Amino acid sequence: MMYADLHLHTNYSDGTFTPQELVARAFDAGLQTLSLTDHDTMEGCQEMLDACAKVGLTFITGCEFTVEFEDQELHLLGYGMRLENPELQSTLSYYQSVRRERIIRMTERLAGLGIRILPEKVVEIVQCNSPGRPHLARALIAGGHCTSIDDAFANYLKKGKPAWVAKPKLNAEKAIDLIHRTGGVAVLAHPGITRKDELIAGLVSVGMDGLECFYIRHSTPMTEHYLVLADKHRLLVTGGSDCHGMNKGHPSVGKIKLEQPFVESLQRAIANRQSSISTAL
Ligand code: AMP
Ligand code: FE
Ligand code: FE
Ligand code: ZN
Image (cartoon, rainbow, N blue to C red; front, side, top):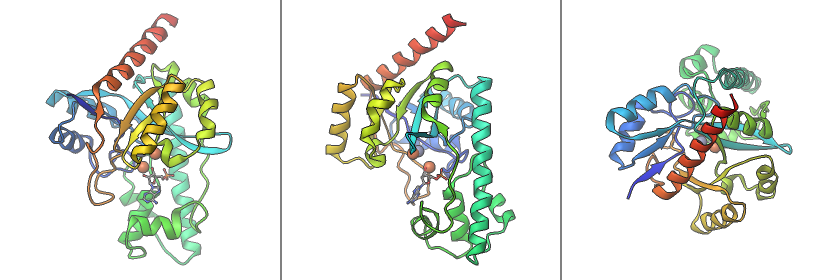
């Protein structure tokens, strides 16, 4: 049997592994197909593709978009988009600049609480263009202000906590349209963690293609529930470990093994989309 892990992060967003390190770990875990789904960036995809090719693994381009739908924040996974598309690149660059600005504003909030995280320190830790709260959590730990990433989120960074700052988000409908026009398919990430089932029918009506039924923090009944929903709405089924490297001490790559028939359905859907955009040109 061949297996895939289609939800992975590198140090191009808030993961700690380079694409090469991640591929080496995935290879050792016995996976055959990978996607890279960094937050709001596809910068690591070419390196990941090259690293996969070297060891004979299949790679599917990907990205995890932070979007909003009916005033709720959701994570949308895009798979199969063409890397070189200028509109996709400029949209991602814009949301990366929003992320960088947000980190600065969060350090200002922390300063107001008497916690000095020097901008230089953040810059040192945030070497990627698409930083997130986990980077700030690492800076808080390095400065001795928090003992762990969970501690940093619980006390400062979670929504409603003193250093939290809202982030402008891409509209889900626009994101789905952009994913489609650049040759990809759109999948709702970790629905059992987001717990906004009431939005799924609406997302399907604006073109969402799939549900991430298999996810590291989904219980077995949750997975079953989303498999039933996927079947009801005729959606693709995906799965992944959401590995962020060593963020939580033990890498999760390969802890979710998506079975090959699901991978092939996804690949077919991407191929269909790619051929429909080619003929539209
Ligand atoms: P951001 O993209 O800045 O909104 O940060 C969200 C990211 O932070 C998520 O993708 C997770 O990787 C991470 N995250 C969210 N909540 C927690 C938490 N309680 N503990 C650790 N990491 C978290
Ligand atoms: Fe993350
Ligand atoms: Fe996510
Ligand atoms: Zn993720």
